[in-house]
Image (cartoon, rainbow, N blue to C red):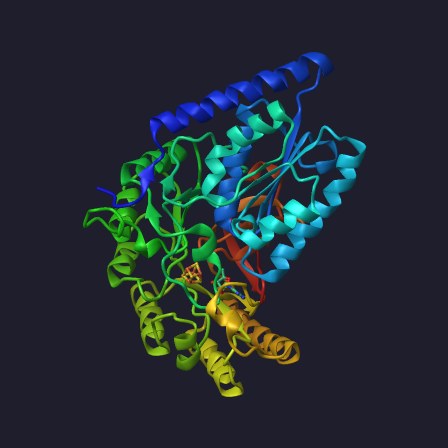
Length: 474
Ligand code: 5AD
Ligand code: SF4
């Protein structure tokens, strides 16, 4: 039994299906009049959870008769799925929305929707209402399943449909999904976060933790593997909390173990784990599994115990490094990646040095590094802030230290043959094919388009800081 969470009721799903059908009638009329199907452009900012939400928005738009385009200039419907994690992400969203104004001036029939984490904040909703009058639809992360309803209302009444965030107690199942890739897929296992790290906006914009029913997840993963997907990533803000809101002993490690029994040649990955909840049981399951990648993304955020306390992370460096050591003991070939924030309020020069030393001790293969960005409404935004100059100077030192470590982690791979999932032509160098190892390391090699979406064995000839270079082994 769930306490507060409700699976979206059948009646609500039928209601949304009804709205989808009415928008479909409208797009069919446009098609009959003009001979072309209207097009939707979905722009995604932020994390993998947003990518996954956008696949649902595209799936619904598709079902409502829109073809998908990757150029906003020829779209009839633009959906901007926003992020709020740092100020930069919000500025980018607002500036992009600003650019779409010019398209709407040329074609007033264009419908512009803004959704996602940024608009789950009241002050941003007010700002868009007032300063972006050409935005037609507005809805937060918890209302994504109501996109058809909002769109139908706009088409029918011609009025803006601006919906502020609703309480996030819903897990929406059985929504249409348009997956961007035919071999890499994202599967949410839980939504929201209860941790309230003092710098983070996520618990405010994505609400409390709620898990999907295990059978729904197992069915979805099985269908994906059967239809040829090679890499499946389980998503959640804190996957190790999976199941805690369901009245059951079944936890995330059990889920991973059950999914691992699905037959086929495929990889199972997950993110993100909170160090306070990452269990030995999960690591043991990973080490014994067939399909689970030896990759652990374990955000450390800081190497200083006093900063970790001020961040409300609820672990210290000793506990953290204990998990890293256990992962390496059970899986010596594991790729370990992390998130680090520099310039958190209270971070002294000594605290920062502690973080650099922690990097040297943990030997991450790669880190995602961030300059602390104050978020309105979070406790850390009220603390005394560090100057931008010190923040960027520490950021440079952090990158330099990690680059040396990444190089040291990649060099010993020279001469080894690694299994790589091929992603096709490299964006930066058209003549080169790129893929990723199970730990997400980029591998560059010669090949052709027929390799895309396939597993290949690549003999590594050169290990550099940001990539491995090799040759296909026949
Ligand atoms: N400022 C900078 N980085 C942040 N992160 C989350 N909130 C902030 C913030 N306010 C980082 C954390 C988290 C990652 C997804 O984003 O490192 O793990
Ligand atoms: Fe944010 Fe902390 Fe939750 Fe991660 S665990 S989403 S950093 S509050």
